[in-house]
Image (cartoon, rainbow, N blue to C red; front, top):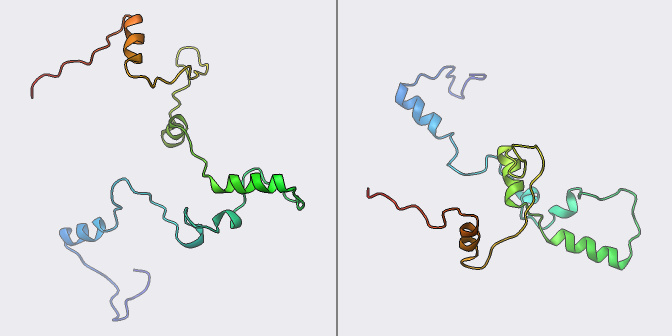
Length: 137
């Protein structure tokens, strides 16, 4: 220990189970952020956009037209969201749009929203359109 406790204790002795109990209390719960912010730096704080520098803001712009002020206010209100590809890239350094054969970039051609549209495309490409049958447990 760096400093003795108020009662003068300089060493602590634990059994194996006592040590594990103390260490497990330090392990965070699963699927939680390890960094927690409170007060004005919390993600939902109302004054946070005022205190933190904004992306693309140029120092020295003091005079703004009313239209520019309205666009600045509207950008402060909405939160930027990443798509799934951006989240995967940032979290796991996994880039789904990078082609493994040629090294080029893939792009989204369409989003299928109609029911049955994907079945028609799979049948046209001669790919299986029905899900695999599961074996009994």
